[in-house]
Length: 188
Image 1 (cartoon, rainbow, N blue to C red):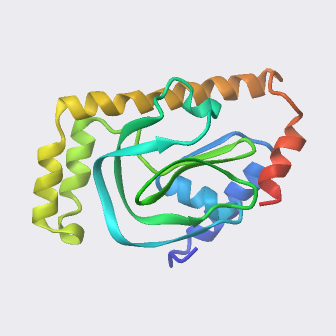
Image 2: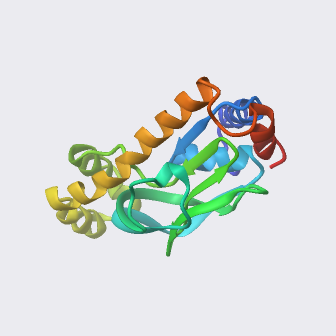
Image 3: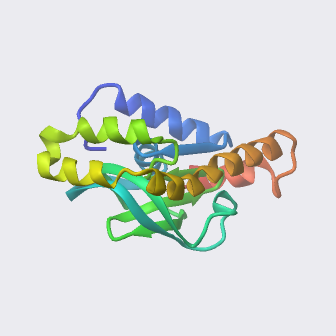
């Protein structure tokens, strides 16, 4: 990974080990990027910056996205992206800015922020002034409306879907054994 912080390599190593042991993992935004690196993918800086409510297109019918439309609205804020998926990973969602979701075994990564509420979206946007400029910040703030937030709430379903998956893993109700599924992440 290209970030130059001493805590990042141990985080990537820990994530890779967790995946190898068959732990279900859901990485959101930076977690999506860390997971991609940990499983053998590649992350890098984007030419621009994606921020605000944006449309993402789901690919396929993965259980994480059950109940979510093929095209859905999410809040995004990132200047880095997964440039190469881990070996064997399945792309699950994207838009013109790149990969927005993937799966490798029991691991999922999503680039967008399903957890954001209106206040968080506004605060994070305000915090990007130095990076993206006043004009972009004001445009994004004007687009943070209750209607856009309500549309983005559809993606929150993935948290329930992930939690249900974790319960099935705990209860031994997932097809295949933990080793077989974790091997997909370990080979990455």
